[in-house]
Length: 303
Image 1 (cartoon, helix red, strand yellow):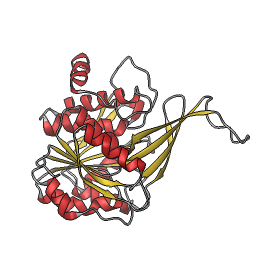
Image 2: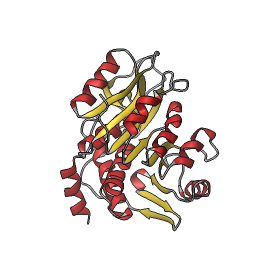
Image 3: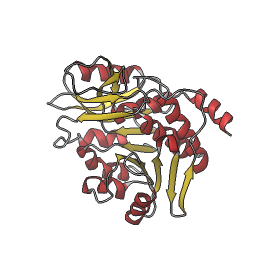
Image 4: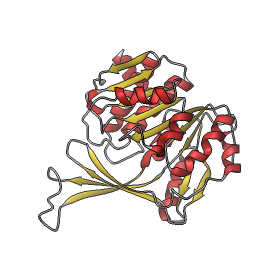
């Protein structure tokens, strides 16, 4: 049942991740068998983001596809249980999307993503329009079908945030629609030593953007018309064990603080980084995104 308005509508990928934790430093391809710990988790960008907003108390809905299979039903049950509206779930005939993540001992990963048929699917426009009505924030990931809902979010008057993830080149035509329609843009600098050239290129495409680039253990960069600011990482006395969902947690913490609570850009960056750092300390789960009380506690310590 569609019951708008929602504070946040997340549009994007959800699926099951199999996280493969190595007992040694990494795989030994010279032998046939490696001993690992393999853990399945509800994941991918839409999974982490939706559960993150729910943990912070925002009324939220999810638009995305699952398979008519055990995994798809499991995802729906989890979202329903956590108060995330699932009226926008539609069926991918090829099944629920999957990821395999090779997890190294320092918490870093190598991702192998199977998006099933997301390149040729189409979200139901009538239901999506109903879900978007009156929402304050539309948080987009970048499956191909999601670009068709960018005008729907714009017509609904929503603030549009797009996470274009691990960018390789700003010339990538796949991401241009998302860049041009966004109010807030997020990307990982995992493939770049310095995100500043990418930030400047994206501001040339869309001068009104506010851009946040996660830099992992090096901190975070914020880009606006006023230039690029670099923020050091927050200090938290917890280990880094799993970086899956860190970028999603950064975006959720930042956007909740900035868009829903009206905090300053600087405070929102700190709160986003706290959210990401907390996620990195949680192993093989999207169910332990940071709560509002814990985020407020760490934020007071950071200030």
